[in-house]
Length: 405
Ligand code: PMP
Image (cartoon, rainbow, N blue to C red; front, side, top):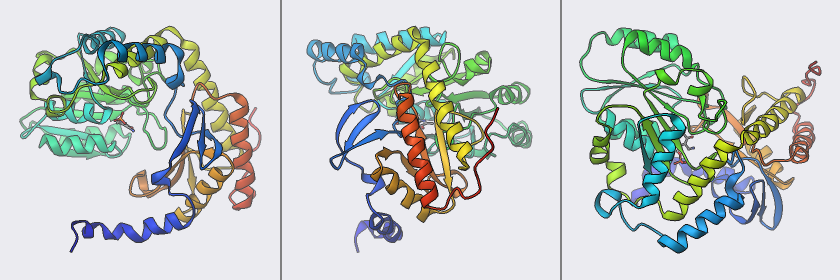
């Protein structure tokens, strides 16, 4: 018996998806030409599923900073900061992030996934309670396992349910950490953060917000949902990633928490892995400056998000509750989702196929994320393809919404 036999339940569904065309879990780009254009199996495609919200992956200043750093500092750090030392760039990036968020402390991790793992498992452990939105990202659930804390889940985006669960906890001993996300990655819906902060203030505990998809997207300065909702002082920990708006890889935590420095010696996903390479640090620092200096990027992102969302909604597609850089189109079933995903690809549109168990309420979704770098023409091309395929798949019959004023 092979060790992987226990996963054989996935074999038939995977083969079924592969038989329908390309394998969505194994898409290979021949080339990436810009933040919004790639080449797949020799065919040009519009990239509509990249999380490249500000379109900075080909930013000349970021590329230049990265190239300079690699020449000056080499290709990698070859070890963890705990054991092998910190490079000047790590500290500069942490200072820049602390300054951007107006917090005393910042810490960078090698991925956003590890930022959640390292932060949450450092903050809570056995004897503590971790109170999670039910739709939390896998990195938050994995952090919960690593932490050993008791996990309590509350209904997605439901402050009343959070209140109820905290009330039930009564005066149980130990620390309490509530974790929510700014924008949720599958549907693009936003947390009711002000209400969550009110509940936390009333019932006690600490609040962590993962701004992975909202940094650079929401808030006048682009700091994310806590800024946009005007509740930064009610949020104790902000976690984020460099792999979306900042166009590189890595993650971070900012906070005013006392004894913050102790996290660096108790957080295993920080201590026992190699630190970010110099080229990544340099492009991330430059991207953060671009984010701060160019609010126009956010305005373009928002205009593109509205155009795609409204276009799909008005055609009659089932989309999320409000416009957001993430627009998820709900398909009636998985087979249609797989068929549409392949047809979109054949028509030059690449986006994300999201199917159970990775989706809320086991929905089958075509998930797109727009970028500030998309042109209006690209968005309109995508809408045209959706319109044509929607007719072919019988998804739109009689569903067109009356034009909004
Ligand atoms: N948090 C959330 C909410 C995410 O969606 C993701 C990635 N999709 C992460 C954390 C992990 O970030 P990274 O991919 O940069 O490791």
